Length: 87
Image (cartoon, rainbow, N blue to C red; front, side, top):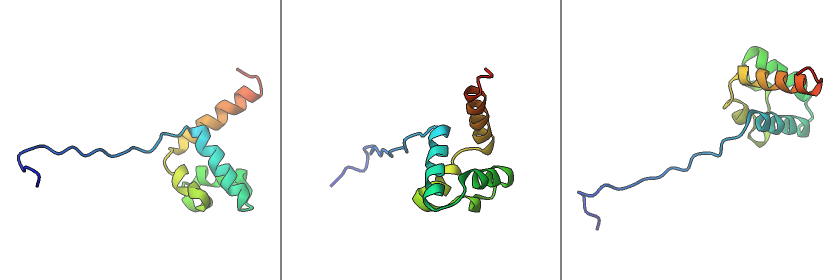
């Protein structure tokens, strides 16, 4: 039996942090697997904030909701600028 006067330690494992780029890739893949146009659906989500634009397949909806929409736009714009050699 444990002593009631001692402090017990409880450790909760934190989810591995995933990058915004990783979230977008996972969501893109899930949308593609389900036959949706991922660009249209992600734009719909970013513009409206309505998570139903994103499939729940492979946890994509839960995953994208962990990232702020402005962070999604920032990552997309950053990659666009890099890929077009503007910066």
